[in-house]
Image 1 (cartoon, rainbow, N blue to C red):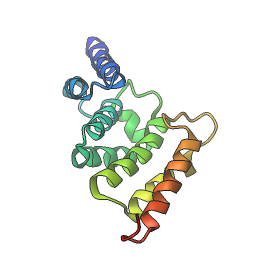
Image 2: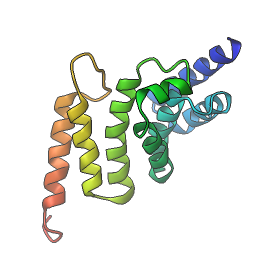
Image 3: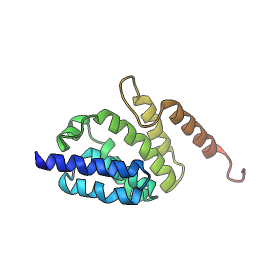
Image 4: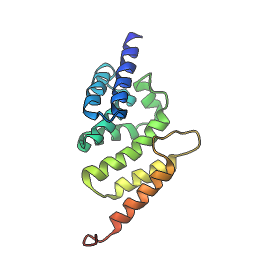
Length: 152
């Protein structure tokens, strides 16, 4: 039980720093949480999000892929504190969209991930991103992608 409390406290401290936009300070807290619970989806997601904010998208990408690939039952087996896994997995799709765009540039795969995020949304499923903002962002980026290279 002590191990679980430590793990939750480490994740929470990292989240507090992340929310304060102190990303470099938050990252070690997620690393510590993962040292205690290496397969925890909550710590993995937050570490990937923090890496993205630090422009370390190449490191964030495999973490996010690992979160969207398995089923929810598998993610539940990985960690006891992960209580809202459908929402975490939903947001992992959109975060991976952002990571791919920032890390590699426009791609059909990135837009498929954003569309999957939108397709999976439903009443009762929480997301860190409002659906209206996601739709507007995806549409704007799709228009930007479709522009000829020589147009401003």
